[in-house]
Image 1 (cartoon, rainbow over the protein chains, first blue to last red):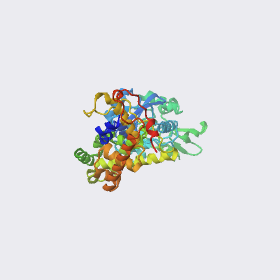
Image 2 (tube, chains in turn cyan, brown):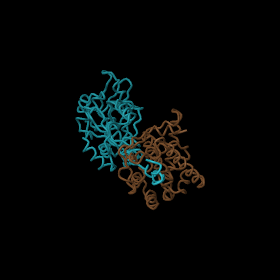
Image 3 (cartoon, each protein chain N blue to C red):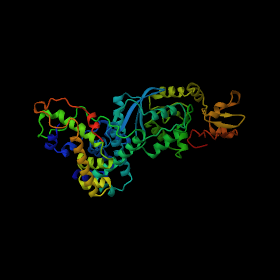
Image 4 (tube, chains in turn red, orange):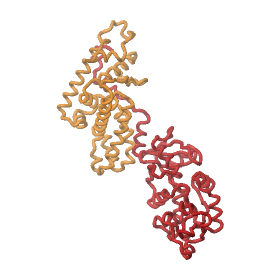
Length: 268
Length: 215
């Protein structure tokens, strides 16, 4: 370029020519940040590889489905654009890993927009169940003040968009059977609970012999069978009970930690 | 800015539905502003993306009539300029000023304006690089005025609105900026009338030449 060129083509035109295109990912990045689009990346879980979708508001979807099916079900259920990423953001990945390993102080932000207050109440309550323990559907129903809504609790848990992080696998049937699991059926549920240190075979064996609660004949406290207090009771003081009514009649009071509810769905 | 008025109306009606259209309409523009203010592509990408996010968050707190009245061009430019200023300040704390990064956009050619000869593509790329580097030597306030007025193409009134300065100040700053740019480009060691037969073949001194010409 020469000085004469400068005169031929005014400086203003050269300045105008400094306009350029943004990197392809910039717009999507902004939409993800404000929660109008999502990215997803693989995550290792006790059930093998799963995929986690997230945006600036939090984790929005977890599923073990392969990418094509993952994207299709995400779009159908959530309705936002989604694009694959190489990996989760470091902080989010660490928080999820800590959560899955039982650290309930690890804060995993969740984006649950578009779900009903009832569903969110159910999932929030499920988050309170400690790792390696289970509670019946009726317990969730009683705890959220909807004791008759046991079946609706089951439906809400089946629609949990973020399994494993919201531990719907820790909610079981009131008869002690493990029940359904959205992320791969009863076998997968058995495997996740096993990975959390729960002896599901023993639990199911006791349940099938009619035991619903465990009491201690020294403290006269009655618990859900997997409550950490119940598990501390030594063999010869351990009393299996079929109902809270029977336990109450024998002078047992319900545990303040696991707050057992009777099979009928009413709080004890 | 007719399309901006329509878009502001749509944003006021349904922010989440209309925001992707705002992103599509503004991403290139805000990235350009940030890049020409900062000279670093990664910083520019961060600033432009952040500007869009801030705009969204601001609008979630506005009542719809206020969103509908937004003058999107100057408003978004103003957010971008402010974020670029903060980014530059943080950089200046760590690095000495005037650490110019090369700002060649590989493979990007400006659209032909029909007046230039086809064989001047390389010249125009060179011009862009030198001009972009020269812009970065302007004082920040002058640079912002020139970038908004002549790279982005806002009017004097819109530039004044975006930068929160009187129109007279903008006019003076743009005038001063253009004069300095011309002086710098003409003072380059490679400038000056070349021998006619070598005009398109003579090897040129690349980027650093402009730096040597600076005070």
